[in-house]
Amino acid sequence: MEGKQTAMKNTIQSDVLVIGGGLAGLVTAIECLRSGKSVTLVDRDTPERLGGLALWAFGGMALVDTPVQRRMKLKDSPEIALRDWLRFGELGEHEVLPRKWASYYVEHSREQVYDWLIESGLTFLPAVNWVERGMQGNGNTLPRYHIVWGTSQRLTRRMIELMHQANTGNRLTVLHQHEVLALQSTHGVVVGAHAINHATGHAVQLAAPAVVLAMGGLNGSLEETRANWVKGRPLPASMLNGAHPYANGRLHHLVAGLGGQITQAGEMWNYAAGVPHPKPHFEGHGLSLIPCKSALWLNHRGERIGPEPLVVGFDTHTLCQRVAALEKPYVWHLLNWRIAIKELALSGAEHNQRIRDHQTLMFLKETLLGNHRLVKQMVSESRHFLLDDTLAGLAAKMNALAGTNDVRPEVLQKTADAFDANFALGDKLCNDEQIRRIEHARHWGPDKLRTCKPAPLQARGAGPFMAIQTQLITRKSLGGLQTDLQSRVLDARGHALAGLYCVGEAAGFGGGGACGKRSLEGTFLPGCILTARAAARSIVAGRGLARA
Figure 1 (cartoon, rainbow, N blue to C red):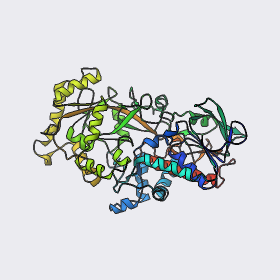
Figure 2: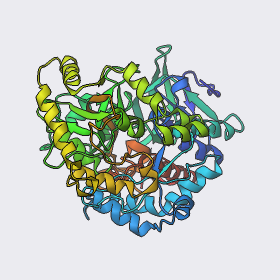
Figure 3: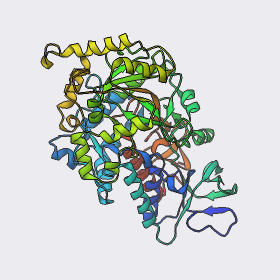
Figure 4: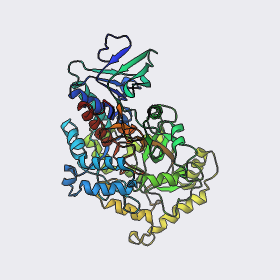
């Protein structure tokens, strides 16, 4: 615990109580401290893990009309971005608050996220990637995906530094390993919370006229994920957990008991290609692969999934549904060493050390010459990465890993031969949807650097062959507690619950689900910052502290 307690035994009084020490909670604390407020920040995790999921994230941000885009001759605007957002997220006219937050995001991401982070001492890579293009071109119509130099880990640690720098006059109390068990309200006004210190077992009373919920989403719990799954959508028999295990939805339900509204709880941003973490931080912990565009996605028998092939980078929502609908809850990625060293990547700070640690020369070397280091690391650490010089040998290893005899060598050979037949008459006469999508991706320079020129899988010198067994992995909740543009929690009538705010993923990144069914990708970290800064402005202005 940092800071001072009041004289009242086991009670901590402050102007603002922030529940959750992820990015949204940290930004809320920074802005409130800078405005002269006293702040108590309560986090469930240990001190070295302050920052939540953002501490481990990659650091991609969807930003609109930035200097980086302009330098790359990209003519973006809030109007273009909003059209993309509403169309891809399938946000209907009745989804008033999510649409308001979407509009707010695209109009203010440049000033309140990009400029604010630059002023805070952070920088971005000098290139913008093009992700979530949409299966029919209905996603991002141009590149918007900016990458924080240093990954989200650098972003998070910088926010922690700024929070302590803003703590003039000893107005900050940080409680680690404290779990909020209940919210306290008096005459319908939220005035604090009850918590327990898991390190000592002692209870503590937290009192504040403004309580900010920043506890993350709902799908850090696989039970909660399954309970909220949209009816009619395929549900896989098993999933990995790529979210934060303490983001379990319990506080969401507590707020619902006070009259708050949980909306779009079944909408999630999951990933289609996860593998068990070789060094798990918790039970069921998974790593999310950024799959190779040139890899073939196969079912449990080693047959190519179709008729439309699966290709990453266009529509993650659809990709997840197609994987979830398969007969068995896993897929095989079939590729070779040439593809792996050029295209394989893992999401998060942990496996992107060149960007994370500002190793510019090594980053450029691995981008240009191939990331042999990462591929060798994953082959060494994960039994789900298989190598062999022959397809028959690879099939045997695939069966050994799965504990079945589902993959027949002749079927795997036929799958590879059918793809390679595309090149029999020269690469200008290929007629394969995956190859067309790869060529489209390679038209954009930054993506071309990380995408192989299409070639036969069995090309001479491209081996050995590789198979990766992956399954669906949870990541973020797209739904959450409904909020207005001041980040105040609303009841069923649209009235603010006095004294209660919600930010970041807990609020569905604004309005209880600003992204709708799909994200343009990279909307999460900026969504945390935008909702947090809005909450702080509202608190400082005294809004929401009495019944609306």
